[in-house]
Image 1 (cartoon, helix red, strand yellow):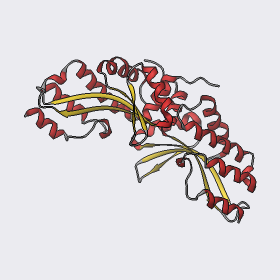
Image 2 (tube, chains in turn orange, purple):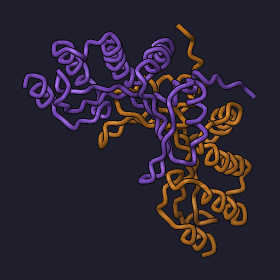
Image 3 (cartoon, chains in turn cyan, brown):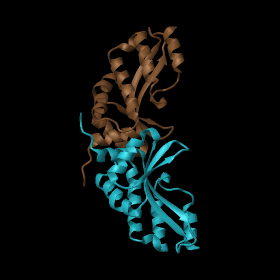
Image 4 (cartoon, chains in turn green, purple):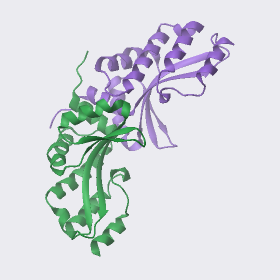
Length: 155
Length: 155
């Protein structure tokens, strides 16, 4: 029996099934008018819940939630510190092998900028919007077009 | 930079994206009336072709083909000896971590039986059909229902 290296298994699984996301929400109460949130998630049919629990245990952060609509579990990390100190360094260190690496690189740039507080001013947030729109459309909820977001920013 | 273990990466990637398949075709010229074929495949958008080439190189068998319809590459192993001596022992040794392991176990039983020639007589082939119908529907092209196949067998 060969021994599976769990870290490398996770990289492979995430190359297939993982999602590095950035979402934007219109919030007039904020100075920038836009809230930005980064997250990392992996979804699986409920029959494969145990594989997501392994990932949760490995990273020691995030949580699972159930979606009754399609009988799936979603492992999700939304806490910025966890994304910055656990998720980002892990995938930067191991390196994804598919085209998803390009999405990860844009996502990592955005997480770094949010951590530095760049999203709190309009110039910084505009750059973050530009970064996000280099990502695959699955990478962020396209509730708004890029033009919508830039208009919110300037309004 | 941590070192990725390619074998473990492949297990993770296949847990997400791989397909262990068994297909049946009605062939009246055969004594059993049915041809059975096993295969292993992984598909990716053309942008991630390089990840499939890594898998092809790792296993030293199979080939890539392009599907223009959805702009994907499919890495596929159809040669029975390659399935039996390379693919089956690899995944048996490392072990998949998702529910796909159950499909793999049924598939491995079928590959073993085909290798032993059980598919050449009606009793053996009937058992193989029963095994195949324990698999996820993605695991084999459901051109026919199980009843269709059993009727071909008895006709």
